[in-house]
Image (cartoon, rainbow, N blue to C red; front, side):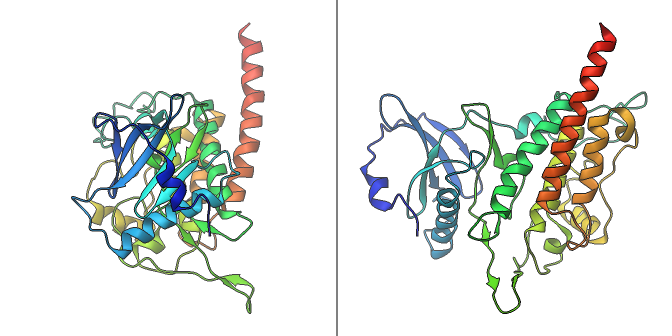
Length: 315
């Protein structure tokens, strides 16, 4: 189904350096390897101390490789160089952006927030950078949902899945949970699916309640990313109890947004608006990713106009 095949993976003879450890996720560790004199690649290996070499993990890795290969033409999706069994070779990324979006723990009490005089975003991005990063994330997801071969659901959208490439662009990574949606030709619609019991505090209400799912789960989680960009905090930042958060999500209790963000600047106000469209409890009423992209592109144009006017005023 995809190229390069396993043989190509084994033709690479990288220089192994045990000090070249880059990072780790729940399933895999990532190593930076010198593929040749001029190129460093990332090698993702299963964390065999945590997970067995069983069919499930082979399938996770196949998903990851297949999505990257199918989306090779996209400048917003991580580049794959080879794959075999539970290992994948990809481009090396310069830095993760999660620690800049949500510095520190991302949890804080209302008293510690120190925001009586004005809101107190915990990250250092300008409002323009926040809009631009929101659009970059959205366009990457749009490449999955709008793939010509059919809708692909990422199924695990979080800030840590977005990385800075060497050229400065933001790319979407880690497709081991991806779902290629089946299409019902008789009824001319995509078939929804189920994930079973899910964990964590970043998922859509239909996931937390083990409902029928489609690509709109990515949009809901993207709204959580926007919240991190806006505030520098995790959603429901006063509690780390996943069960409490999941109950809030299922009941439609949205994360707290300080109303001052709505009018503090044009850019922040627009982020709040599109965030709330992403958070519609009913997925059929939720924005699709193409609405999000269109909205943010228009917001960036208008924000630029405001900035130019402000610049003229300050001269």
